[in-house]
Length: 238
Image (tube, rainbow, N blue to C red; front, top):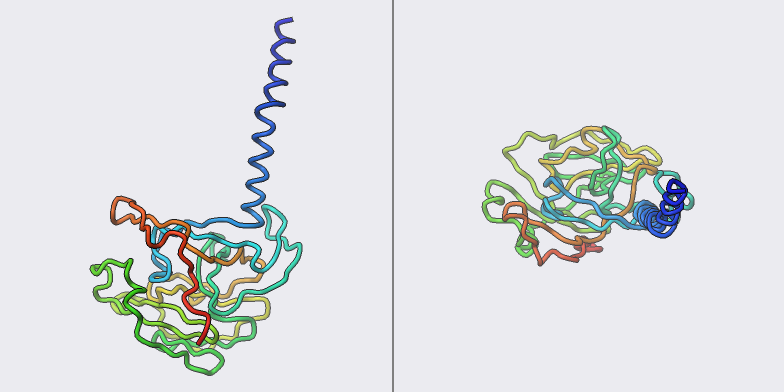
């Protein structure tokens, strides 16, 4: 009788307490998998646009709808555009990365001493506004260069470290159909398509649209309140 009573108690506990929590957890995980998610940024490969310690919002409905917990597409209504910041699975090792779309399918991409040439047209560079560097301490700017890069249809910040070894030039590359060429905004400190090639459309998780919260690891992980809920879209025009 005691064993039966225990089984009945466990059954009631499962039905009233555990099962609802598991269903809720499954629903929340499915939402994160298919609709929206966040991504922690541990490195400076996208500096000055995204800093170490930023937690960014990833809109997984920007381009398509996927089966939860997979990369299978149920429907597609858009494709990544040049200049979009996207989260994707690296073809090099399968790790999720955050980079900027530089080359679209069919584009010809070339790099000449860190200056992009897209479809035969040199990309324009201009001095960067000081306000775009406000969250980077002066000691981290020493010896580095910053500029604004005017991609066709989009303008954003880029940075470089002339003293670091990096692939600053490469011959023209044509981006295959269904593939995208990705680069980090911190051009001399980014492991990207220059080294491991293009990214398949199906490997793109979604578009990074905003910084949800930013923690400064150089200052005891205190929040950078000025970056909280800040947009990653610096400009949409030429």
